Image (cartoon, rainbow, N blue to C red; front, side):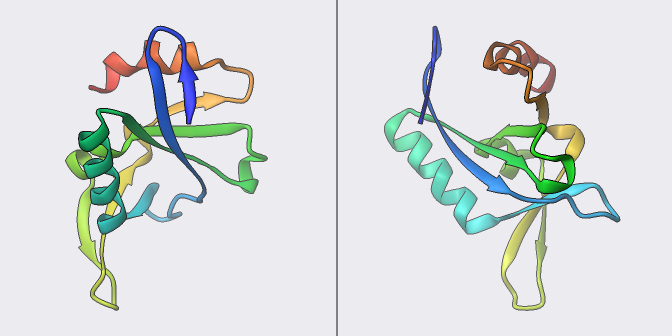
Length: 112
């Protein structure tokens, strides 16, 4: 949980995740995302995915609310018949390690 002044608490799921090379998307398990959306609705608490990886030396972070994953992502079935969402990188708010969280919330209107 992160306390953001003038916003309140947000719950973040930080993942070490690389985008798919061919399509420049991040993949998310649909069931996990639905569970986070239920948690968000039940407790009136914002839940966000926050992604980075070693390839960018953990200097770039990709942020998105879990509800936007289901709204903007494309649903697919993998070979095991599990459903997942593919979300384009352009649908994320990107922060560098030198940015503060205030920039995250100033960028939000552009994405919603």
